[in-house]
Image (cartoon, rainbow over all chains, first blue to last red; front, side, top):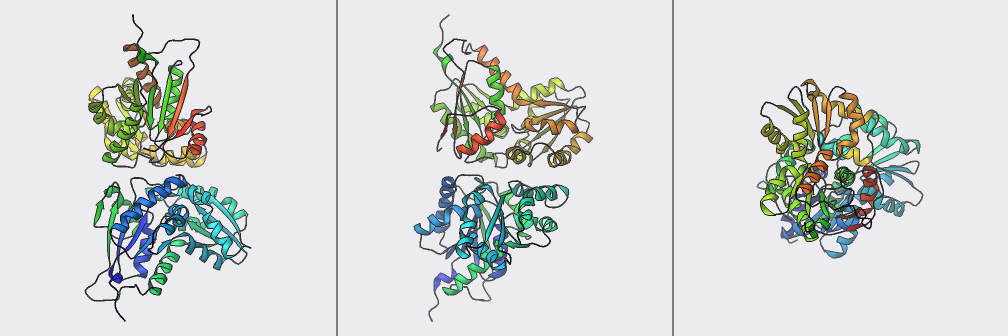
Length: 271
Length: 271
């Protein structure tokens, strides 16, 4: 078998900001010999409150940047961008693109026993109906209940993830989903895994699905099926280069909290 | 005296989003015969978390748009843009530009009796030190205590301005300022006036300064000094045209809550 040079190209990951680092964290665990380019569009974050048109425009410019860097696969770690832009981008480019919506939906459908799934996300993700659509394709019998949680992202970005305030906010947001007797709660936003300790207190009998783990699994499977996983060679180390469109200092500060390890090699780019 | 045609031109108001409508509300009260152009940069909001360079770039493109519409004066209703961009913009354009920082600082200095002023605002506004600088110029003896309050804007945008959650968040943010025995609290962000009922519960002996009122006063004074106030003519009605860079529906929905009256004539523009 001829070794493809494609194997050695990096994996391109794009998110609206720091949130996608939860996805990168799982990719780093799952793919120990790869190099990554992570682009955070911190000059235009958050995507969750923007219109479909604007999200597609922003996502397109971010993807164009990563393509210019030569990557072997694209991961869209942002749920809002995955919801709105993946259908468009798939028709525009040839490289495999993995979003966070399909893997998350698949896992939730696999896990529900009573066919009642709850989804929480940004306004954009919920309004797009993308999770509902993917779940209904997989199993039309599943009932989907959704709620946007606009304060969760700013809570996480401020590092205010435990205590009375996050608990009361989560209680308000999750109230109607719990009343609707969901048995699976899908976290439809990259920031939300950091609120799991608080959310769990309200949802003891509900299984929480974190799309980032499922997405890392999906990226692994796609690379494997295309024979694109980089082999374990002594001289190769896992590496990440970061690109941000604004405020690298803040990206490092908040990002390290999310990633749980040091962030280096951050370049400020203009899109 | 010859009537200047300049008088009939609109007043241009620019903000990063809907927050500046608190300033527009006071301008509408103070100047009953004027027409206004209000530009909300909703595709790139919030400015409060961005770098100085990016805020200046965004503010410059917004101001350029309003100048292309022929206005007689520019009001920058956003505290972060006022803090970072006004010094630069003043050197670039000839039209009078009024920001929200100087009027607010002047009012706070006039009102303090113990020379201890507290300022709350976005991360950008607080980091810029603009209020501190203006206050120190007016009275070097004043001690300034500041705190950024990142959750206040999302709370207001969600309409969650009363009850236990906003109270607990305000308590956390204002704690150190109260301990520092401030007697004046300056609201250094356009969204914060909507939280006054909650903030007041924590600051009963502290006078709250809302920059929007002071800014409207300043705009009136500058126009009057230049003989640019439009006279009361029966056929002229006060009017506002709105321009937004994204999501006009959401602008109308949240904006009407802030303005307290209907919003019509909204045009979606691309900057």
